[in-house]
Length: 298
Image 1: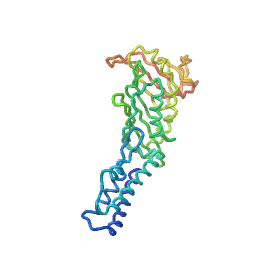
Image 2: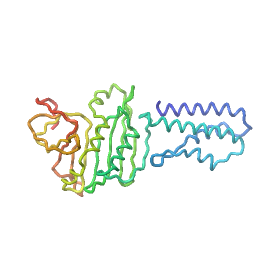
Image 3: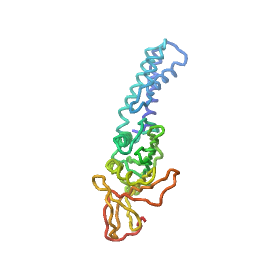
Image 4: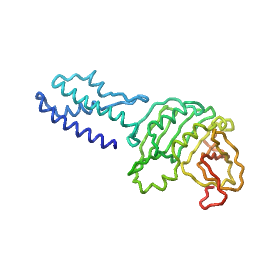
């Protein structure tokens, strides 16, 4: 269920419950509004790392001690807390409940398990069988420190598509999840079908021999761009490597064939931000064709 619909139903239920309880209470100024307020307070939470703390109910129990009609106000706060629990358990099963939020993750090294942890957290928060990758960009240094990363993904429901921007910043050590837009299904279906599953791209990143890339780099920074579109490549004028099932990089011997694949493009950056002319294309999820086709990407 859409998060806005859930909140609308919660507020409606809180208003009706406050109306019923008000008839049983002592007279108190603005009591009706106070009852609704306590229901909303009980539903308030605050994210700390991977844990959602029920901040509202904690404030009610520890800080707020209403004197008049305290029992009914407690009922309303507990009603809000029950809604918080519903949100907590329903959220992981619904891709489309993701709201803009920030998650603390700390420093990430692209060469160790902290990078796997980053990808795992993204899949855990917005993971869904329908999730497809549009594109991503990662910047890391020769020491393997991930400086920043962005992932643009798209998820599908029966009636709509939802795009998300996910970003990581080394300075803050945080992942930010930001829903970007909703699109009606018909207008995006053809494009969506050409995109690779996000889980497949993430698995490729997990297995990829990053140490080999760093060893061959002659610059302090490497930029890695991934495109989610499954395309046809003509590779006559490019330095191309194939990623095998173990994540190792295999030199591609050009036989004049076209290759259907998803691509990772490597750009080598100097300290001043300028890029070298030398660029490499890493292909995964590939298949070869013996005939030339129109629309070849060069």
